[in-house]
Amino acid sequence: MKNKIHEKKVRSKKKKLLEAAVCLCAVCVLGLCAVFGVNGFVIRSARERLITPEEAAGITDADCILVLGCGVRGDQPSPMLNDRLERGVELYKSGAAPKLLMSGDHGRKNYDEVNVMKKFAVDESVESSDVFMDHAGFSTYDSIYRAKEIFKVRKMIIVTQEYHLYRALYIAEKLGLEAYGVTSDQRQYAGQFYRDVREILARDKDFVKCIVKPAPTCLGEAIPVNGNGDLTNDKS
Image (cartoon, rainbow, N blue to C red):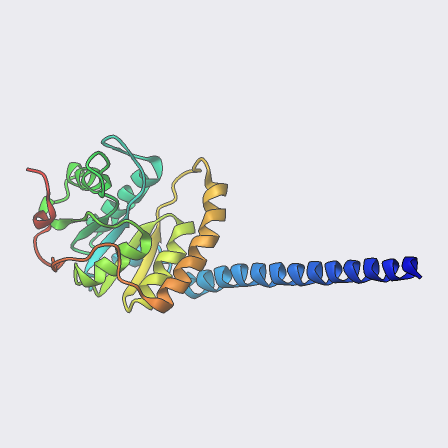
């Protein structure tokens, strides 16, 4: 009798463990479906707003070209940032927009993306007054939110690598901006597989943020992008 009772308890325990495992698997599958479903939705919703440099040059009423920041090494842009800057300057010179808005991380004294970005443009014969710096572009979401609220942008062309551009365009649309994207891919970038994987999670994160629409890390006084970009200078 004791053996039978023991066997029943064992079977009951195994059944509960099996049910728990099945439930856990179901939750994992649903979670993965949600993650990849949102990722695909963000890509599809933004794809039609990717345009060529030639198409961008035909836009006559864009307020600015937004170049999204990336890593710098001292006073030199990383390869990815260099390619974004080259594309942004190219679009400016083609007449796609009258201003450049360089948005990146300048939250630390010893790390400064935006001054490196502006120097690149000025060295390429862009008028300093046509180059604005957003020193608090700490994330893609922050950069686009601040483009609208601080720099009073309503229509813009966004420049970054293609894998990143879908999310940027999605955020812009959800924040009420008319935006088009031009890719800046000019080479193979080391570590791209890792960035592609991380970007899936970033798209999911910003999908949620675009529902909640939190304020960015920093706001401040308005500096309209149709004015003088030198107002954003922090160095003499």
